[in-house]
Length: 527
Image (cartoon, rainbow, N blue to C red):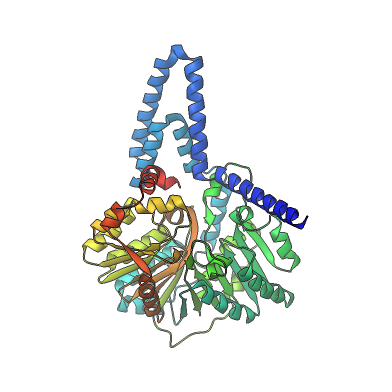
């Protein structure tokens, strides 16, 4: 009887997961494309059946409409790679392709979100002041890096800081262990904003401390992305956390309403403690990130901890997202908490975010700026490689200038479609002299750029359309900090566990993977 009950319970769990997967697939971009394609096929069959006498007029009208749409797209300001995708879609299914284009480019379902976020960003653009002394010192030492700092501050109140301690964690487990230590020290507030939260050992230990701290009077706030409702957490989880004294919000919860709002996910990972300690990086709050459970082999991830004035930038980023649906703000209260000054800490740091609701691709431009200024090397770790034309050109140009551009990508993928798409870039990148390695033990989830022993980025920003165009993201830019040698050392250690991709290995790739990538290349910007 017990065995039967267990089997029935397992069956129900699988059914629930299947239902969640179906709902999420329907509201994804790929799901919308498939639905519209099926509808067009059905309509075409109906047209042939009911309007046989009008077919010449219908075909003529369709051709004229397609020509108009093609001319419109060619003259738009869209990224060239995306233009090719949309031109293909429009020519294959003119009417419903146009509807899909209107859907993705419109503000359906997120006008209020866009208006609210832009209002918050405008109201807080001067919430953190830039130290003129720090700016002047950086300009003296590194004018080009100071120019990047100027751009980041203009893009959304992201000042450059000095005298900030930066600690690099080469594994998710090391980050988690330090998180637990720092959380125990919290006296005033704890802010957590994560893309994925999943019940298990990692989150269980964190939650235990959060609940205790909330009872002690610490202001504890948790925010996670709405996709967790359909993948890792029960629908009523915010209510459960509130019962423990923890304030909780879901960013963009999924519901049966077709909206472009669902394209914009909160992919950030932020933990702020009392305004003086912050964590960010690729590590979510789930057991695979600390390798307590195995998914796709060994999970390679990284993170950084900041201590000092720079933490205020992460405090501000969290509060901007938290206050989207609030009537009154508390920015000044939390930004006024004092932070220690680490006189012995070298270099400069800039915590920054990237909002998908404007036309400024901050994450991509920072990466491209590093590539364009590099002299000796740029070493990169990324889980995905779905590049637009500009990013691919920046990578290739750096390599062709003689810069050592080396990339570490997953050896065991978490998703078949992005993995196949990544491989479509290999031949072109190798031809320009870029070195590509795949992490043999498993999956690389780290998002790292390190260059010339002087600058680095660690954050949440992948090298794919989702991160660069459609997600809320964050990262920490570092110049000459004490942590940069640790980042480069970790890259070199990880490299020793990788297999090198060559022209020969690309040629011998499975035919099924090549074909899948070949077909998906057409709709890569829509995935």
